Image 1 (spheres, rainbow, N blue to C red):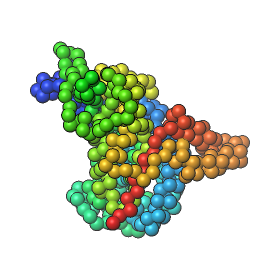
Image 2 (image 1 turned 90 degrees about the vertical axis):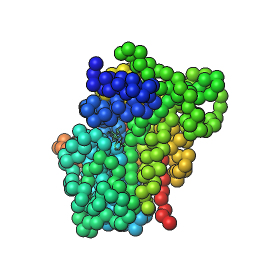
Image 3 (image 1 turned 60 degrees about the vertical axis):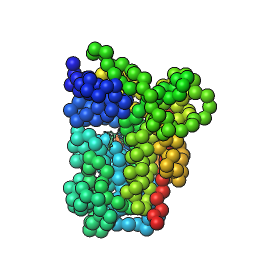
Length: 377
Ligand SMILES: C[S@@+](CC[C@H](N)C(=O)[O-])C[C@H]1O[C@@H](n2cnc3c(N)ncnc32)[C@H](O)[C@@H]1O
């Protein structure tokens, strides 16, 4: 028996059938055998391709948006930009390579729970110890981060959100879909929770009553067919609440595949996906720790207590922040330098292909971007 399988079996024997979020937390984040704690990652050589991993264009467009948000905050220095669920730091590299005007003021905080992925933050990033820019980062702190002005960009790598109230920007690309969720199934007498039990060496699904989850879901639109399943994303909703509680001024911007819970009802469970090496994986109860487990983000659940300021598609976001100009610039550089064939020429040409992937309405372009603007009091 693998170590995660043994751990899960032991927990079930001690506590009875477990909610799915506990199984998912173990499968993805167990420090010894969890998918992200060991091998799992985004990227061409990883398990799934995210927008920053398509190439540096996503970061370049985001850098333009970040500049504008910095200006609207009165150009603070230091200016905190948090990349939550930063993976190996690819988005940060893309943003910094674009050299936004706020670079000198920027403290980029990469928050990544996996030790393995966090160890890659030192590659090509101007990493400084957290204490240099986030004094008292481990205690709750209501002051401004202290740094010498104009000396950025600085990058800080942390395993969790900085424990301070701050003004700035928090972005999260494909984080919420990876936060553990519970699962409910509609039966003739209402919602029941799918828990995970075991019969010998096999993990099995067990139905359990769940009045508290029914209250969280609230009423859904349309008829719900018997057997329909949806995720209950309390961890994602609580993460949004935590971030908005810490931001005194600025904004939270989340990029993810998303739909309403009512839309997920009709997907016949297709909202729950597993991945490894760019292929769809097996049932989430198989090969624990060896595959990613993810769900579309239920927009209504994560926004119920905190209505967003703006909801748009990723394609709309990229268009608003000038992706077309960057692609045209790339084409021009390619035409000017194609005969030399240097890195600038190749990067210029690759922007065209990156833009297609990032704006594909059936792929990354169809992702949802949720903005919460915090205007302060
Ligand atoms: C799908 S990956 C996205 C990585 C990156 N943002 C990208 O777009 O390529 C999600 C990442 O979030 C990390 N993660 C999950 N829960 C986290 C948490 N509570 N705090 C920080 N990182 C977390 C995972 O380890 C994983 O690296």
